[in-house]
Amino acid sequence: MKQDIKICGLRTAETIDRALARGATHIGFIFFEKSPRYVEPDIAGKLAEPARGKAKIVAVTVNPSNDDLDEIVALLKPDILQLHGDESPERVLTIKAVYGLPVMKAFSVRTADDLKRVEAYIGIADRFLFDAKPPKGSDLPGGNGVSFDWSLLSWLDDSVDYMLSGGLNKANIAEALAITRAPGIDVSSGVESAPGVKDVALIDEFFDAVEWACQPEMASGS
View 1 (cartoon, helix red, strand yellow):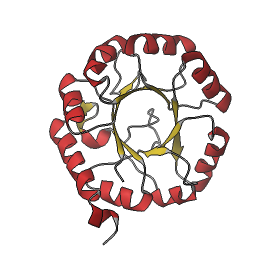
View 2 (tube, rainbow, N blue to C red; view 1 turned 45 degrees about the horizontal axis):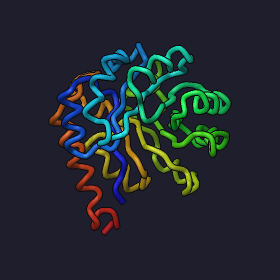
View 3 (spheres, rainbow, N blue to C red; view 1 turned 90 degrees about the horizontal axis):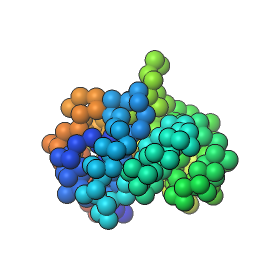
View 4 (cartoon, rainbow, N blue to C red; view 1 turned 180 degrees about the vertical axis):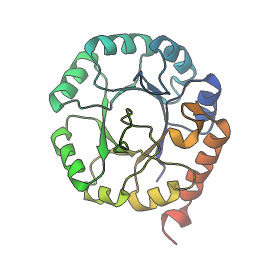
């Protein structure tokens, strides 16, 4: 199965071009000011232009206000809104109704109980993203370069559409896919040379690793 691949936290034309050239299906822009990957909405809108019609443009937000979303939607014109905060099912429904865009709801995972929270959002969020819970002391809900126990995802019903995130890189993506069969994957810090600095060589190496992991003989476990 060919995975959706999202490169998140992009901030330069060069890395966006490389992600698109390698087949990224989604590109993400971070609108959380504490993140080293933060980008102003107007700049993101300009950077996103080459991706339109080639990959889904994702606006990543954390507990955004309507004013925040008004600006992001007007300037970026995203295809998907990703909510990476504590947004309730009711808030997700309101955002979908106001902006007419699909929503990907992110959840931070450490234990099976963390996944039980997903049930309330099934049929409301259009897709889920499962990330690792941030380490103690981190101000970032994602992009911390840490992973979680991927076997926990076996709890999910096969009908739950999601992206796997959290500490993915060229060294562990084959194992992650073998365990989860995730329909989508999201990478950020795993293709960076420093926090917030995407590296075209690391992007290439990550896509190479995904392609290797998805070869028929690998996917079958033989």
